[in-house]
Length: 313
Ligand SMILES: Cc1cc2nc3c(=O)[nH]c(=O)nc-3n(C[C@H](O)[C@H](O)[C@H](O)COP(=O)(O)O)c2cc1C
Image (cartoon, rainbow, N blue to C red; front, side, top):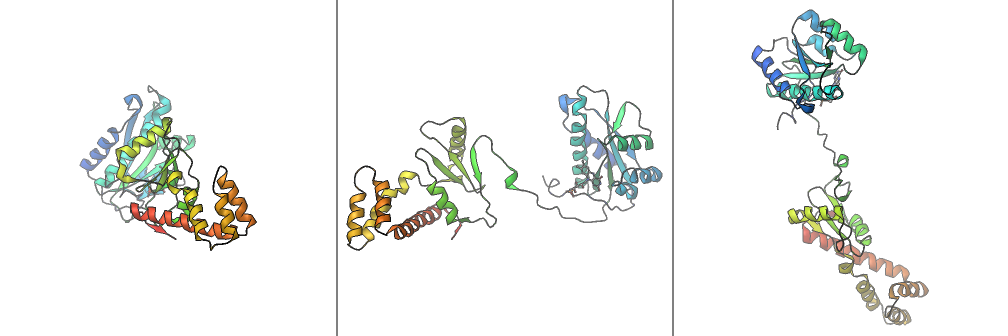
């Protein structure tokens, strides 16, 4: 809805009065808001008198825009309603509806907070002679705008959580994932785990145990099933096949004592541990580390290319 992404707080207004039809539209929008148990605890004071506007403008340290506006609407809530604890929440929904409708009508508006500050509520109630059964909620200053503002983009993915699924958010300011980041993820792959990269949200989605999924795993699996194009599955531990990388490394060494010993080490049970031990003894540990890093880097880069994921080195 375009008004949601266009509205900003407008605090400077033309003196031109707001037409009655537009005021009615603002109030209709307010009363279209949701409320707890549909209790509709609201009442609206429509203020156009200059003296009252000016007094509302000095009713709080931050309410000055009301003094310069041709119109203020003061939403109030009934003290005695079905669920009083929700009354102010209901009034917030109604207030936001007014702000959005104002934007739609090419008016400007700003929400000037009153409730829950008791002294401010009382001041405004006195200024407008609001009856005892009602409490002032806020002041909405409205008028034709004298300032133009562009709404800032406040969308922030780090504020979003998907409690149904296990996810890890990545900070990809330029939309590119670094190979280092992918390699870390590849190295963390667990036996039954499947990791998906969400190409839209740019984060990881995990199925921790595909063989024996729990609720969260099942939910994640459903997400992937619903939109398989969106998720790129990462190479599993089996596909990375560290053993094969060790074999290639041994083959890559010139024929030597080290090669013979490493070749022996990778055969039979306990191969991984023995291989690391012999690499240390034969002084090939650093070469192995570099070889392994390159192999992981190639797997990561191939995976990005295959899945159309932008990456950086
Ligand atoms: C509960 C509430 C109270 C506010 N009170 C004031 C206020 O007293 N004076 C004011 O100038 N703006 C007030 N604002 C407006 C905020 O300052 C404004 O919404 C915020 O800075 C974000 O800017 P935007 O509305 O242009 O997106 C209030 C907004 C809310 C939601």
